[in-house]
Length: 223
Image (tube, rainbow, N blue to C red):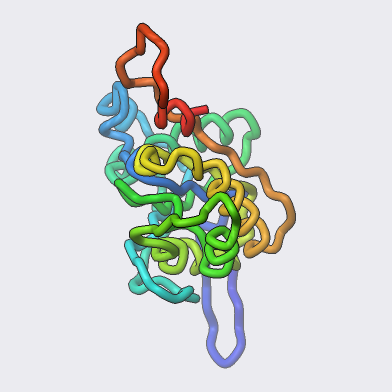
């Protein structure tokens, strides 16, 4: 595609399909080679209709219109998937094969991050004003939303996939409220309606409790 004005810009290798935004903590950040059977999967990851974009790490106090440094779309090949989110890859592969369309994955994930770090400033203030949040103080609110979500808000995406929760087990009773706050906030700020928002269930890797317990924070968030 060639665009001519005061100067001429030629763009090549353009695809038309679906773009999904994948976010969360280390669950989403884990790269394909480290997944189950990851070495074999990576060696066979030759899918020219899958492209991925990893957002630069950036935590800021105010919403940012652009990233702090340049990142690029990457073609899915065995030589390039070292930094590709495993969850995003398997999702994109299935979607591309079933729909026979190109699929793009934008991944914004930080290991150990709290959900409140991914909620916009105004939405988080509204959450703090709710009765459920009385006395709650977050350690790092808004930072990753401002630096790693806000810059892509103008992007026309098909949907969102969220994979996070372990870091919030200390305040499990607030997780549902914070999650619904974040979903509403992202949909509003994207401005493209009630786009699909998929929440990946946390894995049941902890020890099975043989007897009833008073509290089970991980199970609350997992549910």
